Image 1 (cartoon, rainbow, N blue to C red):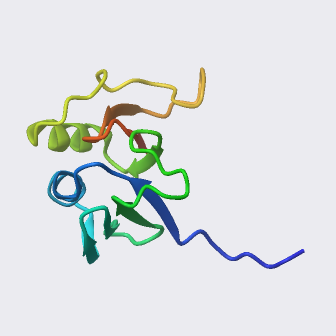
Image 2: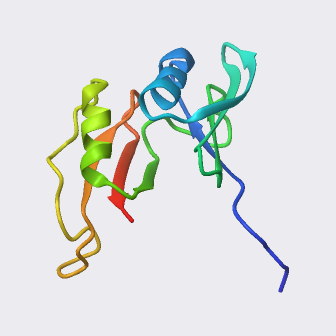
Length: 126
């Protein structure tokens, strides 16, 4: 078996790079770490403050990338604060904060919304 250490990058197809970059950086607080290319060959890497996997937004839709097909789960220590922050920036969650993300009795509070392309983001209290 090969030794695989960690996941480093996810690519997400987007239709409007400037709107997607604004959403992930200004609304969600990701840091833009790289921005290269333009038009239909534009890549922007964004990263969370705590590090981890880099999310690469791209207008290059080769390799079967289709905008609106991703589902991301993000963690927060304070679900109410996260909800208040994103709604104050114009995000419209699909619901209020809910309980039991992982099934009855899990106790995990969460809420969900979409990005400009319809990709689903779930914020869960960790």
